[in-house]
Length: 458
Image 1 (cartoon, rainbow, N blue to C red):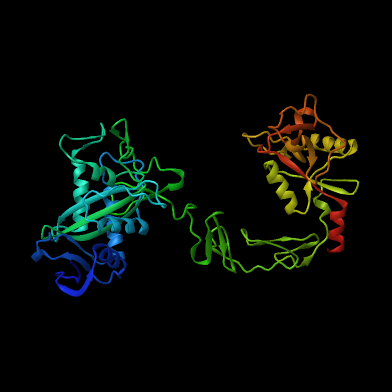
Image 2: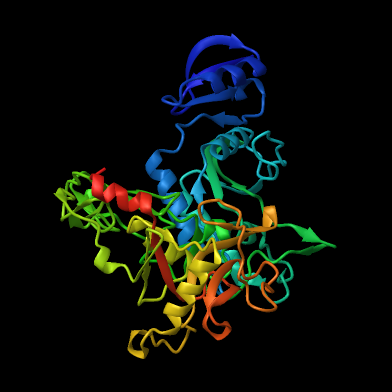
């Protein structure tokens, strides 16, 4: 007959007669607040073996176990280039507790729906002889007998606890301990479960537990962070908590997916470091610069002033369209954006008249009006025409298909690599397809309808 007893001492019996199966089931379902044991009556000649249920590990102990693992993993020799930081996993801890209640020194491999392969480290010792920290240290001490160069353990030595402890890709751990009665003595079993498990073998030879080299030099793209505390020797690969490596300060919040700061009202700048209280009356607020982009016909710091169209800034007026020739260089899309900010578009050439006048004007520009930049050919000018591969045709930025072309002899010839069109000086300012990243001067165009908006104040 078996009895259900309260710990400590396992000798204050409740007097409930149950079977072994009932005791185990009942005990496992009880709250961890109490410690229970299954006890056989040795006075009747029954072997005194069993287990005493103990409270689970506390959160503080979880942190200590993980910290100790990471500290030791950072100290391997030779230094590990791909050693991952370990995290506590409650599901693994539950599996470790279930195995610990069996009081077996070598737990079998468990099949779990949550984990495809689990690695195990176990230790059994007389109760009170060692702490969890001592046990983890003893596993790491096995490393003295592990020969990294050959991936083997010294003869008649044990290394499998060490190799699992420092298995580079084992990134999660859960542990448990349990008191067990064996031959009338109280023992304690310590178990840690690791995922993904290690100690793989190929043709009977152990795969080396980690790759040697400068720490964090072989981290994967998903674990590009490098975790290193003051008591670590090397760093450990981790999922970066801030992959953007930026801080939005007191007045912003980081959008990690976009790596941009969302600023609180009244603040702007890349890191929300600029106090800004601008209100745009007739325009759009440019948050990154704390300025207003005014609507057509308005100016001033807050776009509150009515202004006339600056015809004096037009280099040419052709059929009511204003053309402004830049004195600076930009990529194609930089030039396009700048023209749009000014309320215009990159120039469009729809007939020979406009082509001839622009070519003549550009050819007569004084030398001191040219931009000198050794790295780029700056005598050429972007116009608003690009090649669209899906449609296999050139289009103006407004979406129109050109009906007039003035490509230079042999052009276009870049076959998809030069998708943006320039007026090429060497070809008499006929057209040439060019790489869009090329730095060129450019021509902005303000159409008659846009100028009318200035006049009407719309």
